[in-house]
Image (tube, rainbow, N blue to C red):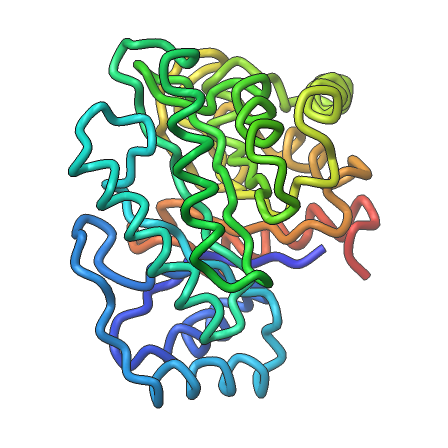
Length: 285
């Protein structure tokens, strides 16, 4: 298990590795472009190569990108759908050039139409992205907090998309805050065991490649996506200790997306808190 963090990719690109090292992160997640813009990243080939080499030199071999927040593969707006597909293609190309494992992204919202109405469209869009991108990259579905009409709040929806596409390149990142907000209890060892049994039945443990480790400000089943520092929210230290102890997570990198104690995002204190919990249960040596 590696403890990592989402870090800034502001210029120069390779400095994201240094930012990770400063807080003790062993794995990183970055945006390859502005998270609230369709404008693609303008990284030169030299910058991409330098980032890859710098990560290797610093011993960081686990890198993910996170797709822009505008993506919606469930949209009825054809322009928005095409932009979403195009953005994911650009991101997976970036992954291929930098050695990143894949792109984690929010599937989107059906705006009340219902999952069944958009299921086939989502699958076709994912197939479109995979057909045009490096075969050694992953497209990683992130579970949602089940707020409004968002897709992926249930394991059943994630599993349905994966089965419809039928590609080993489609993986899953579980966000702990989103899980809790969507009604999946992960605050005790018994609850974690039940939740992961459901995940295995409906998705498959082999699809899990990353965890967004975030405590939750809001309560179980609230549907509210409100991240909190590790141990400071409703999941609590005991919840994260239980998560770290479960066999399903033993070889899965944890990526922090917490607000941080100074409001600047993942920091050394959160990294050390999570690493200590992992070490206590034998998930780290």
